[in-house]
Length: 269
Image (cartoon, rainbow, N blue to C red; front, side, top):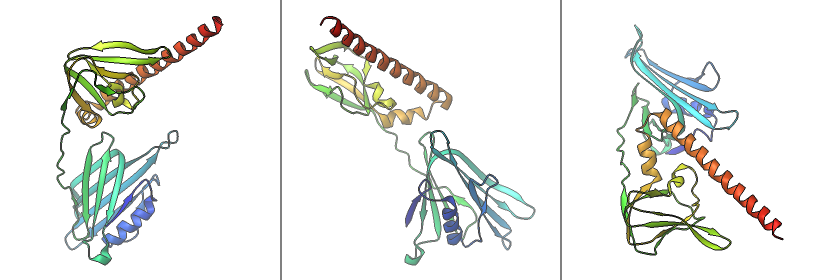
């Protein structure tokens, strides 16, 4: 089986390969010329099946998104039995069979939408419908970690993809300065830290150290993103924008502090 990512290959090459496997004539382009349409008909069974895939490129960011549509039904009189439309897809992988090795003439699409939800669809030569396999989704789990007094949870400057919620104990946050480490805060039960790692900033801005034996609930980025899918998309967008603004403000404050320190050093010379 050959796997092709739609970001890596021309849509018209993909259309030609699909048409060849399914044994249909030349595919048509969509009205906006951004995609293709493959239509199969079976007059003997009075059935039809349509597949439409489009690619969109953001001129500013160059990011690619896709749409995927299928429709199936009765030819005469034309009746739609089932249709499906998926928009703003982040990724589509197409699995082509190796016919020379005797693999079944079916094409599998593995799709990831803008919320990170995965879907699988299968189109077979001998049937005029889109099969949707049931994907077992394993929900990421929270885990509890124990740290002993003076253990380092993470170091300033290191990369991470987890945040922590204190169930028991005390955690100190320390920042390096030219005069040594400074304690920024000491956190107790139900406090959390390391959350910026979940928002596209994997580098730790401080060192986290256990000030006494501590139990920490570990929230991975995978678990966090999974739970975001249960929240309305407009709220997630707003929430992420607020976090980004907060991070930019922190960076501006840090930059200003460094400039003030340099200015103070010059004035003392």
